[in-house]
Amino acid sequence: MRIQLAQRTEADDLLGRSPLALLIGMLLDQQIPMEWAFTGPYTIAERLGGDLTAEEIAARDPEEFAALLAEKPAVHRYPSSMAARVQSLAAYLVEQYGGDPERIWAEAADGKELLKRLQALPGYGKQKAQIFLALLGKQLGVRPPGWREAAGPYGEEGSFRSVADVVDADTLGRVRAAKQEAKQEAKRAARAK
Image 1 (cartoon, rainbow, N blue to C red):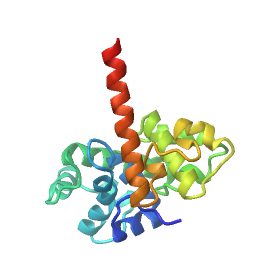
Image 2 (cartoon, rainbow, N blue to C red; image 1 turned 90 degrees about the vertical axis):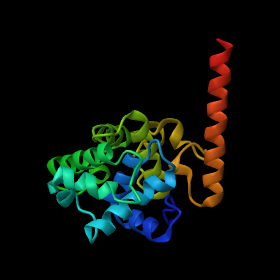
Image 3 (cartoon, one colour; image 1 turned 60 degrees about the vertical axis):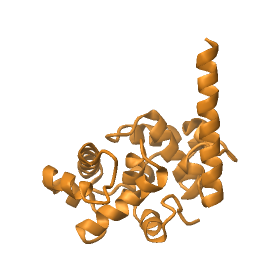
Image 4 (cartoon, rainbow, N blue to C red; image 1 turned 120 degrees about the horizontal axis):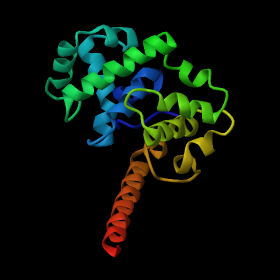
């Protein structure tokens, strides 16, 4: 299956071949449209002049890296703070996994351990970790025992809750509609209190 989160061929190709790019895209996926977030790793790679490595990102001067993300078009609505988060993620990957992000899931014994490893990543809370775990299982075939349970509602088969369920423009629309409905339901529930 081909990753189609950026909805842009060259960016999606990078996401499909680079676990680091996929982790960075997921990290950037907050407060901006999903396609913008998952195009971010491609934009960073282009500006760095080659494929992404955790070592190179971690070693960059923080101010220089923030400026790189802030160039127009900016990689994120908040380029400086997200640059710091991306560098923290890269440094953690170098320190804990020798710069090889694929080890996060390749060495996990089960879904519970994989979720714990993902939650330990800088910038990844429980929800982001569960969504990423569901993405790994649903789209990349990374399915350690118990992965669906560990991914919570995001691991449910046939759901349209998150980026884990986006495989084309149609499913992107369905995920967006489900998120809008969930927001409306939350508003109705808040008003009913």
